[in-house]
Amino acid sequence: MEMKWLGFLLVSVALLLLQLNPALCQRGQISHVVGGESNIWAVQGDPTFYQTWAYSQQFIAGDKLEFHMGPSTTKYTSEHTVVEYPDNKSFMECNPSGGMKFLQESEMPEIVIVDLPSPGMFYFGCSKQDYCTRGQRFFIKVSSAPVGRIGKK
Ligand SMILES: *[C@@H]1O[C@H](CO)[C@@H](O)[C@H](O)[C@H]1NC(C)=O
Image 1 (cartoon, helix red, strand yellow):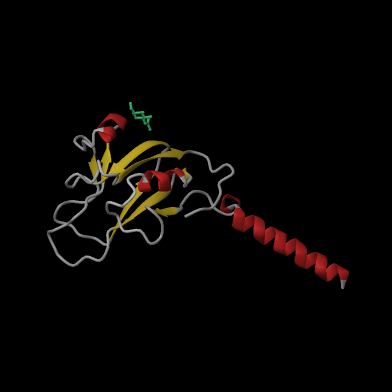
Image 2 (cartoon, helix red, strand yellow):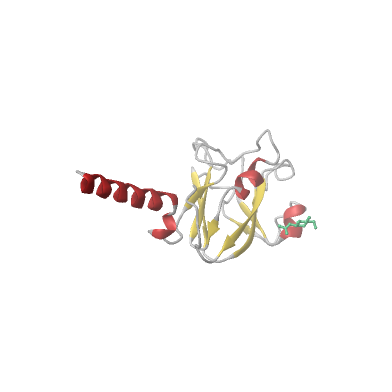
């Protein structure tokens, strides 16, 4: 009887540890839904919303960003874009020229996936209208090693 409970306890503790620390069973490869699971990529009421979300995440090289664009209804029109600013200055000025564009004007996918293959600082935002200055942007720091990763999506 006692041995049975001890075994149960050990298995429970092991499972709990794996759950708390996915780095023990997986390396990189977390797909972070930008803004959280139910977010649609758009200007939010709180201009610090996306940056606050970004600070809450731990990004490791090999992870991905998932921008959820909402249901696609109209072709050739798109309310939002996904751009990567080349550096902090362009990001601060909301100037995407020289950066990467992950969504063309003519495309309207429901999800835009951005790979984060290498460590460094990366700056993302929307290039439509004044959305960037209104907070539809964030920067992230991608690290190289999954040391002490806490599993958060
Ligand atoms: C970007 O530049 C601004 C102003 O120069 C600075 O306050 C900010 O800390 C920089 N951000 C990053 C992520 O380096």
